[in-house]
Length: 94
Image 1 (cartoon, rainbow, N blue to C red):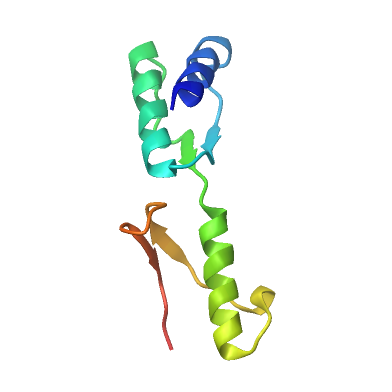
Image 2: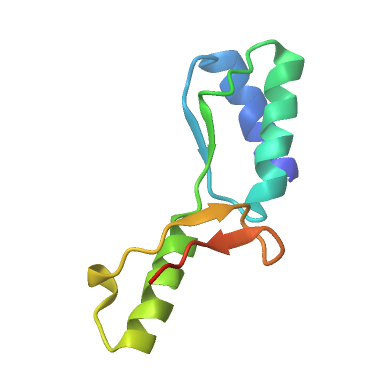
């Protein structure tokens, strides 16, 4: 968390209008830390701070593909929610 805080503090000073993608686990927590740092610096923009959870989609696609005997690239399982076991939700349908 300290590393993310330090990096975002520098971003707030050197490039306050940057789009920031957070991929550091736990994403749920590190995005919140980044948001607070940006708010404190007076440069927070909810449209420019993102939590990147692509790995969750890749895992979901792979899991379903294995169950169905298909290739992961042929499967599309949207994933919503946070990046933790409690909050992550793959959207499955028939």
